[in-house]
Length: 370
Image (cartoon, rainbow, N blue to C red):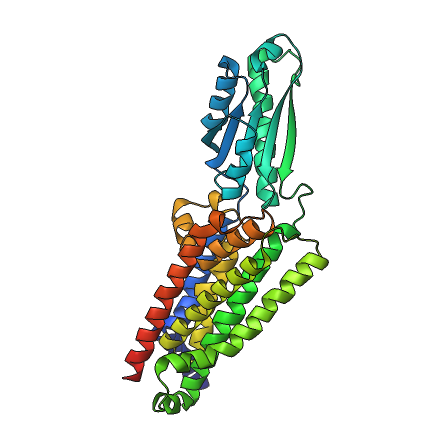
């Protein structure tokens, strides 16, 4: 008799779980999503890394070296430079991640059995990615000279010299400080905003606000202003810690840097408000924030793993994540010293995201009020 009651109770629980789509997603969908994400994102492989070539020799052998680098599929030559002066502009705009400098008389010195030096210059704002690019290119150049000179010949006739711009010592803090700012601002601004509005709805106090004379826009602003102030103070605190504790430089304009932080804050807050308008409970708001904001910001924004190493589908998804542009803007201003003329495009994209998200949140809020 007791066993029958227990069996019926277990069946009822199974039925309840199978009927609840949210619980089903957590139990079955979340492991699948995480395995696929980590399987494709967590990798040291890369392909089509954007590089430039400064060929001071322009002979047959240097042309063959260029073809050898591109033939692997790991490098894509996007710029053919004419002088060292062109390098800075390419790195500042973020068009390339590495430059290969081939010396003059490359072919003559190689076949005269003289040592010649090929220089690899990488963007050190992403230390792990830069190291991977340089190491792989060095191995490819070594293999190239072995093919051209024969296995019995001296293997180090071509010397490879490496240099990292913007982060010569490859300090990891140069990469994680901007990423941590993006993570914390997104968590505090978006998640806490969505939770506080969802809590008002869950406790019934939102109904009092909706029948008050305050228009929806002022209700939203009243909810997000405190989190804006606290989040901005957090951003300033992290920047100060990064500068004084981890020695991360701020080479660009400080007002521009703070303005970018405010813009990203506004986008994160708009996301939080939009999530809260679609969530009836704090639990739903928390789950939506975790899956829609936290995981993409951590995994797909370029904070931990290079976007170029991801499959094409995930690269497209990363292009709609605000943190992708925010981290790029922080690195551009802090490490490269760029002004608005270099970063207007990602700034414009974040501004467009803000307008769209605020519009959707306001419309959704008005609909719920009616």
